[in-house]
Image (cartoon, rainbow, N blue to C red; front, side, top):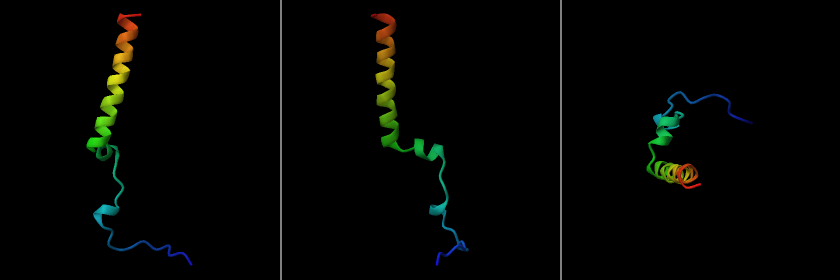
Length: 50
């Protein structure tokens, strides 16, 4: 049978974390910075050299 009752003492690690926590992670920020730089370089290439 499934246990449907919730535990009385929920630890802080069990709480859902939001978008700001995800954006504070260095690997994600490095990935987003690289993608942003690639998009910026493509936009500048289209605007200035084409």
